[in-house]
Length: 269
Image (cartoon, rainbow, N blue to C red):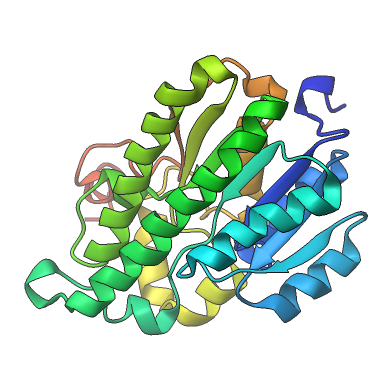
C-alpha cells in the first residue's frame, strides 16, 4: 500500500518532455498518486492526447529554446491550478537526428553544441528560475533528469553528456541556495531506458552491448525512472536534496571489463 509520504494529494507538478517516454510515465504515476500535472512538450498534440487520459491534467506547448515559452509554462500552470509544488525538468534535445551527429569533441559541430546547451542547460535554468518563487511558497521541489553519461566518459554524445553534467551542478547550486527557503532540488540519472523511441532508433546490437554491462537481467523501462523521480519529488524524500540518484541498473557501478570477466568465470571464453 502506498504510504502517505509518497502521495501527491493536492499537489501540482509540471513535467517537461511529458508527452512520451519517461515524462509520460512520470505524469501517469504522479496522477495515480493523487497529483495534478501539467504536461509540457514541444509535441503539443501528444501532450494534449496524454492530458485527456489523465484526471485533472493539462497540456502546455513548450519550446525550451525560447525564454518566453519556458516562462509562460510556469505562468500558465500557476494560473490554471493556483499553485506549483514540483518541477520535473525532463525534456532534452535527444532526437535520433541530433544524436547521430553528437560524437566526439574533435568532430563536434559548434552549432550542435550550442543548441544542446541552449535546450538542456539554459532551458532548464530558465524553468527553475521562473518556478522558484512559486516553489518557495509551497515548499516544493525540483527534480532534474540527467544521465549516467554525465558521470562517465564515452566515445560519443559529448555535447549531451556535458550538458547533463552541467545540470548536475545546477541541481547542487539550487539545493544550496534555496534549501533554507524550503526548496529541495535533486536529479535522477537514468541509464539506457527502453522507451518506444529508443527501441525503434537504437541498433539492437548496441542495445545488447549496454544490457551486457547492466547488473540487472534487462534494461530499464520508463516506469523504473518514473518511480525514482516520483520518490525524489515526494515527501518521502524530504531529507534528500542536492543529490543524484543513479537509476541505470548498476551499469555505472562496476569495474571496467566486468562483461569479459563474467564470460571468463562462466567458461564462455
